[in-house]
Image 1 (cartoon, rainbow, N blue to C red):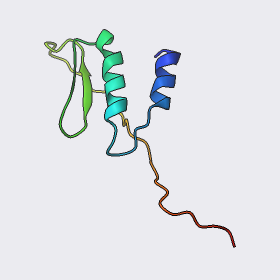
Image 2: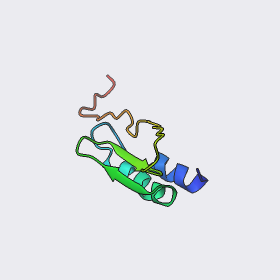
Image 3: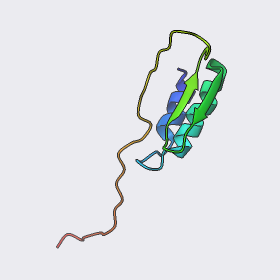
Image 4: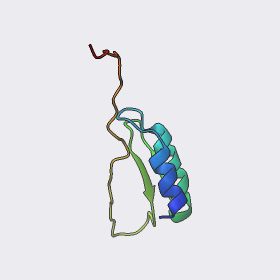
Amino acid sequence: MNRKFLMDILDTSSPSGMEKEVQLLWLDYMKKFSHKTESDNIGNAYAVLNPEADFKIMIAAHGDEIGFMKTELLEKL
């Protein structure tokens, strides 16, 4: 992994349920290392290398991050 890609991934917001932007970034990066890249309707993004091979390996990871939304500001009394 190169440093620019790592920094781009870290700078891309991806709270749970809104990971599409980071997935698109990852899919674009993986195009040069795989035969095909895809995503599905439940939020999985994956790259396939040598799809016709008899032996397959899957490496999985999460692309989301814990996100918080501040909805109320309480002032210190």
